[in-house]
Length: 269
Image 1: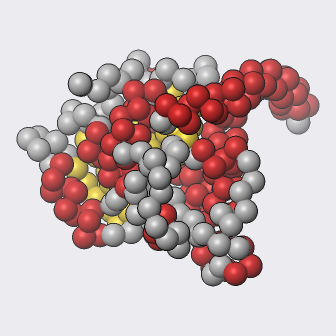
Image 2: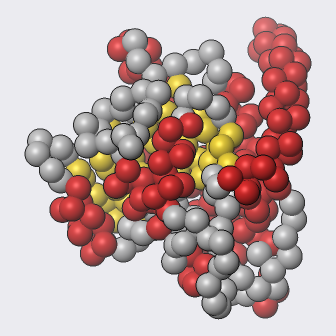
């Protein structure tokens, strides 16, 4: 079945594209959209670039460690030069175990990749994306990958869960701030998914009922422009939809109140 997207994008940036959901996004995005792929595994990026370079399609790759500010700057510069209109902040990491027993740098890096990089790329790329699409009479797109772990504190994945709660809250608030702009914003909440992340995080054994990365990517691209929060997987949607509905209502109300005070404060300065 062909993917039905609300908007046909010209150039997409996918972070964490060398494996898992990121690679699935790269493979699922229609061939009419050019790609900029980034991740830490340069060999996998090259292989994926060669796989997806069909016909006249442009597929570029740039290895990047998103914990490093210099790598983020280089990626932002490249994305601005290519005039992307779809940003998919998919890259993520985490550690399984007690916070004080985990590698301290790994805990800090989790926040850098899952939170800092998401904000850094979005705030630097969105203004240009919005301006270009307004002039062209089109819409830009932003997908930030959160998690079903974002809904509550979860010991032994404490930093990962908290970082995804940040992504979730920030993305929902940003979507409200930008609802009158020519950009669609989506917080994607995958449940357990068959990727290599669990193994890299130190979790042994397979995760039962894990979903397929391609299904997650397809659902997300289909939801972009139609809602601001999408929970992948039927079971997860049934369990978590009642949690997200009141948040959407609250975001709208709080957005109106805080927007008023923001305008008042601006006029007084």
